[in-house]
Figure 1 (cartoon, helix red, strand yellow):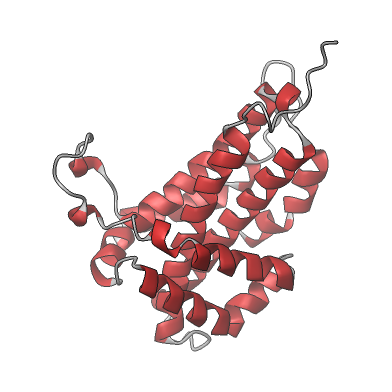
Figure 2: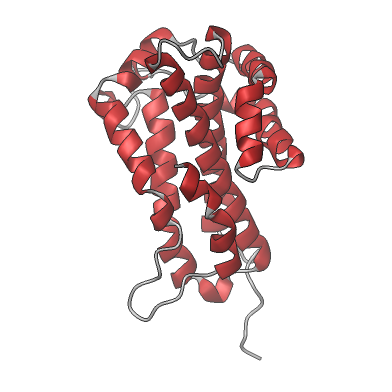
Length: 230
């Protein structure tokens, strides 16, 4: 996972995936270890256990989480080592804090009200939704950018890169917390910081997949590149 994060600058430098019948797999090449983590955590029941035992997303919980996350020097140092500047680390946290009310709408599966238009039985736990959804959005980026090249601006590419990078950061933070739980001799994170890392990681994944959808996949007329037709 760490090696994939370190490859991100090369992905942005390439820009739009090339290809004749199929786009180059720029973003999808980042994901194999991420999918391995996802499937393992699902198989061992981690997501269900996390949803059962971690506090629900409320505006207050999100704010407390952000504070604990910032205080976790181990996590912040790791993000710095993998190419996140101080400004980008601040942006990750601020995106979570400023969206605390929106995040509170992501409720545990058992709390989804009756009468919704989908079968709740098939809705996975919240942390699984956060991780799986983020990976699916990143997975779709290559084809989307390749197909919509005529519409894509540098601003859209920068947004796509930032939100993909942020989601990988959220995944890393969650994974680091899981490792702390699994390793009985891991004393780099306190229990409070581990809980905060799980919640903050999921929150980063949620916020950025929603923002990626709006900034990169919903290309409105005012955002698209100018028409080449004169």
